[in-house]
Length: 56
Figure 1 (tube, rainbow, N blue to C red):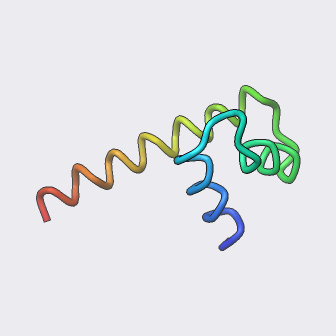
Figure 2: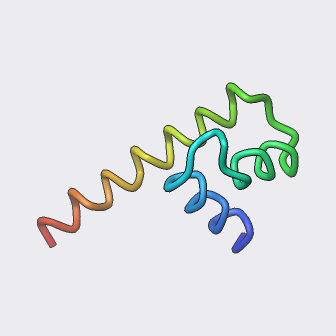
């Protein structure tokens, strides 16, 4: 679980040329498109967390 969270953080702050993108893709046997979806979901989750943090 920790491994998954660390790479989601790396995907959030990285891009397709980052090693975390390719390691995550190969480790979980995902397609490039599916890995992009994980990256986009990470961005949305991070943005949502920041918005919620403004109100708490």
